[in-house]
Length: 165
Image 1 (tube, rainbow, N blue to C red):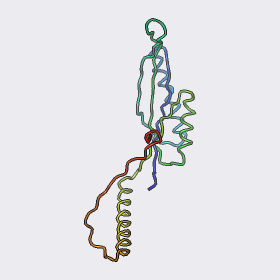
Image 2 (cartoon, rainbow, N blue to C red; image 1 turned 135 degrees about the vertical axis):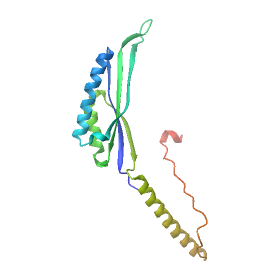
Image 3 (cartoon, helix red, strand yellow; image 1 turned 30 degrees about the vertical axis):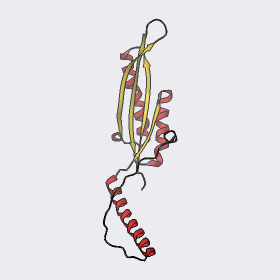
Image 4 (cartoon, rainbow, N blue to C red; image 1 turned 45 degrees about the vertical axis):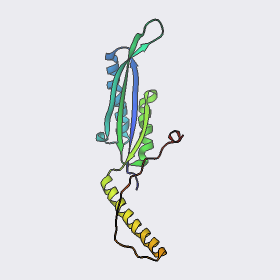
């Protein structure tokens, strides 16, 4: 089953400013560069969505008591693309638009028409099971009877190297 879409999270434009007002001005400016880069890469506007936005104070902890230095804002967008062969170019363009401020959080894959794919997979599984049952029955010198039980069992996602230790 081929995956027909991917989602990337470009955690872009993490910036610091001395005042919240200045921080907001940066935030209004920076996402425009990202949006333009994505749209120039033929990503549809409806496929770009804000996933997370936060502003928090940044303190200097050197000295006797913490001193407010300014504010840090993070603007994370989710980009949905159906042309998998374009993924690398879109990611490169988005990161280039943000420059040193860009953070890329990774990809997630999924199916656009999941129900249709699951239906086809189930039908193929039944055909394969019938074929295997007939082969085993023939080797054992018996006939295949009616289906007595069918169970659908999902598979867990593969674990990464660190999870298997």
